[in-house]
Image (cartoon, rainbow, N blue to C red; front, side, top):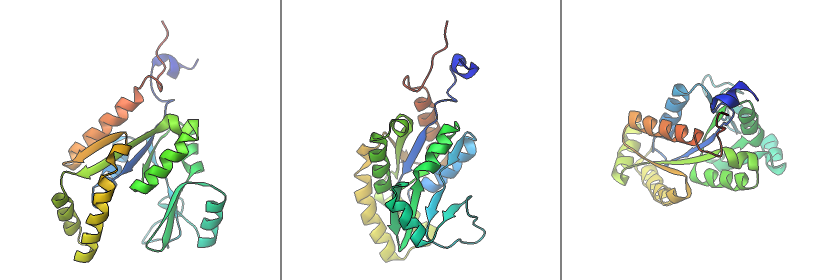
Length: 213
């Protein structure tokens, strides 16, 4: 056996951490924070049909595909999850996730509630993904807090905010389908709770190998 296995460490037990939240719920900030705090965790790079923005680079920020290439991958069943948002398609390649898991990296996936449901379904049919999967739902304490965050963001019209809040109510109702619920209070507190979840999952008996005596 390798020294890692004898030591009882968890390096050989990578996680697929899926985080979902309503729009404005803070999941992008939390993802940045946890990736900074945990160098052993990697972001799953998403494919998209939209054009690069600013200094975005292919293979680092996104995999930029034309619509035809994206559709071929959908038809071939290459995506773990995919969706079309405002006329542009986004998807996470199964190979992107699996290759990182097999290299010993924890993988972080930032998706909406529908995407998380698709990932859960795929994991039920794939023992490797099922063993690694941990799902987390993040939500503000109240609708008023979420509305204030959306207004402060300054990127949505009042009509857009109203629409997003309506969708958010439907999404929050799905929280029981996730392994964990984080009630967002502050960036620091959200990160602390997320760290605790990752550490607890690393120590689950089905993922651990105890030292031999």
